[in-house]
Image 1 (tube, rainbow, N blue to C red):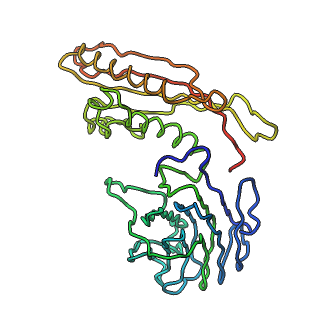
Image 2: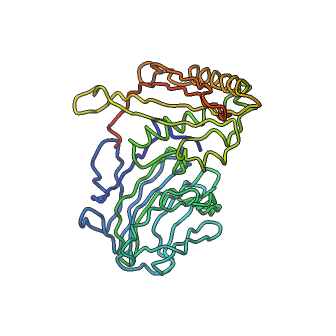
Length: 353
């Protein structure tokens, strides 16, 4: 998939209340039976809740946060995604340490603590995605890669099926369902659609949106002189991390977010201002070469973002920019870093939270 747009969101959000009456705006209700609210969560011992996707809703995402009160028996279905052509289920394996993801084949997570036996354990967050072509991915705790940059999710092919349903629940045992979010707008990974709309607007749609725009640029320097792996969000600007990157590289960073005004009564929509910093770092045979290479890249960054982002004046506009050009102050300085700051103004709809 790609980064979720402002019109692609969680259309069903169960946060521990009655799934048939979840409350809020733009929030689909679930049909089914079984369970009751307890301490702000929904506890099921024998029940299930479902939503039927429309005929053209074939790429699906389901996120569930839950824990075991008592362990469901082996093969008890907990989560289901089915789009009319394919089906995948997350099932209990009869223990508190594992889950099975069952499609055309079966893969497992085996190092979990679903009963929170350790005092530092927290309820599991499982994200299950299904594409129209039957591709399945299952993530835990919204993590794509582990600390060693190794993929930390399960991939498989769904089973062929004419079923058409999105469901959660358990036929036995006791499961506390803290939250269940469902989107019919796509099969989104954790870096494409976050559970928090606030984080989605700031980080995914704004910051990572800029990263993806620069990676896809057809301009010569961005296309041929800067490797895609060197255009990244600035999660880590420590010296150890920067040394790992081959120059030239580009860091994107959202420095500040502010809301000068609410556009409607009760805050139905707000204006948000985003200061997006772009750092272009280069190294050359001498400082002049590094400076000019960085300036060429910085110019293409500005042109790419100016002509392709912030184009909708009523909901999304590029308001201003500021440039700080680096100069050499130390004889040992061989690295040049230019900084471009862009200020975006966006109108955000607040009723889908």
